[in-house]
Amino acid sequence: MVAGDALRRVPDALDELVALVESARGVPLSASCVLPREHVLDLLDEVRAELPRALEEAREVLVARQELLGQARDRRDRETGEARVEADRVLGAARTEADRV
Image 1 (cartoon, rainbow, N blue to C red):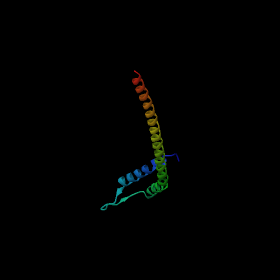
Image 2: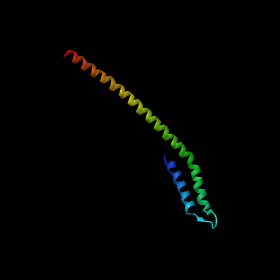
Image 3: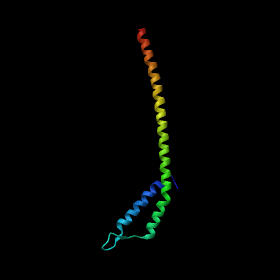
Image 4: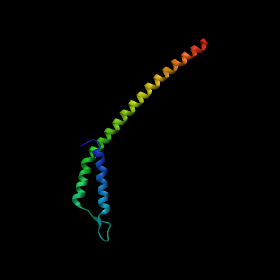
């Protein structure tokens, strides 16, 4: 299965289950309804099968996100340090020039 499919399929299957219940024929004088057993069981089996994959994919996305954030922080810190060094160099050169003038 392509990465992300499980993440998309679980909510779709749950939405389909909700739609089935919402559109189900009601049993007179009760809050019960009649549902297509096989269809509901198939959807529940699908959710049961896909949920662990979806959770693993979500975990992988979070790990990748943390890695990217770490790389971005490292780059920011490195470039900020380099900019400070360059600013100090330029400021020193300007002071030297000002003192010379």
